Image (cartoon, rainbow, N blue to C red; front, side, top):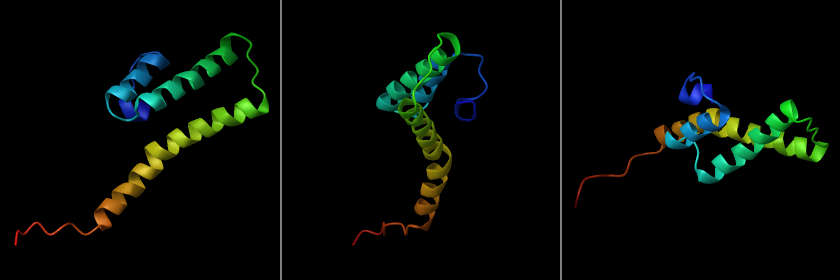
Length: 91
């Protein structure tokens, strides 16, 4: 989150709100990330020990977020650069 919205001294929810406000994520992904953050908080502060299936979902969710923000964003930019522009000359 820090790489996307900067090093702000905010809690996770406020930083997720910033991700949405600045267009990095949409409402659906925000809702998903809030659930994942709550699971992490519960693990750290409320003795939550997720089973392997839940842990796999958490890991997949975080990996998916990272891939979209840092890998696909760059790859898609390369697609944009490689794609010929439409002819703007009117006939």
